[in-house]
Image (cartoon, rainbow, N blue to C red):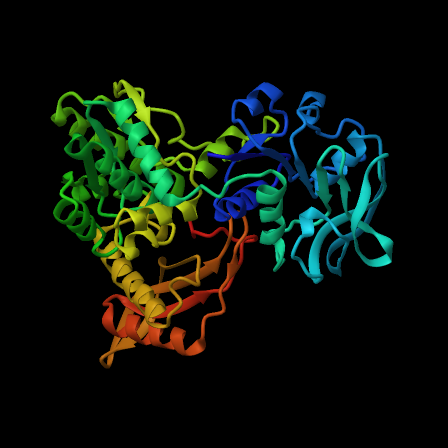
Length: 504
């Protein structure tokens, strides 16, 4: 399978570009900008992209790829910071920024990179004035004569001071031209090819051994379990721990899909009383998280012991987890517990992570191809501690039951309005605030429910969705009339920042 390699200089652009290239059915991997030529050659790439970076390329010591990487002779597309650092590397001069964070009309010259394109406004995060190195020619220009792109025909190097995948109707054509026409990549990356390849890889790794996975009901673990089951059948053992912190009917759906429809070896563990006992009297959010995480491991260990010899632990690690844990230039974005690690107290021959090369949207596509129901593979992100972090203050069964019902109504009405696939995440929060109200002519002192709907790309920032007023009114009416214990509903319009996505 033909491959492209992205050298990541930081920021979120590299993942965005990689997803778009894979969307063109060309396989692409992301490495740190300081990857060696040997590490890159091991991927057998047909081209390189230099992407990302928030630094000033003109400063002394600015991050750059090694001379050996530039000397590999591969076609190269340099975007944003990557374009500026390439100009500097080959002896050009950077004169500082002249356009920042604004749309600009770009004029495109004749180039293989722009084949079939039209001119249009494109958003520019930053464009610098520069003097191009010898042998480099401008192929795109913006207002006031700013050079927005270059080409070096001799070295097969191209550079753009705008990101073609962002707010750009022609962006995919640019990436496709580079991948297919310039690098000569075959468009042979597909979900079906991935599944076929992974089934073979899993069988080679696991053989006749037995594997174990914890199914939470989330997208990653569900797709992972289905893929493993296709590869090794009943030697794949699944454990679902009902912590009592699940959404309404979540455990019922898991039992139906994995146990009844797919016929997997599924063990359902009802640990609600156990978890709620541990959480009794606890109000601090971090203590809640720690208690839930530790108790989950204990329950999982006990169930694993009942199975006897299990050779492999399966985890639903996905590609963004790997990239964030690896970090860029030694700076780790996030530490993920499920990346390449196993619980110290549990002994396994090895670890299987069949989704670790996929982005989230690709995981969903694999789930659909494996026959999982749409409401499972398209579900929105859900926090590991479950509803405990959406139940403010002490977590009790009574409060969780109120929250479950309110959340189910909100999600149902979002779906009825045709917005389920248009909103990144939406949920209800049971605040710890109680106030006076009236129900059936009698005075009440009940809880306030907060509704939240946000859009985001990477969860680093988020914007509140402006839901239609009629929809909100329907949700308020239904929740206050159908859910005992609630007499007030509010809508959270706060973005991230200053707030976080969850309330705790």
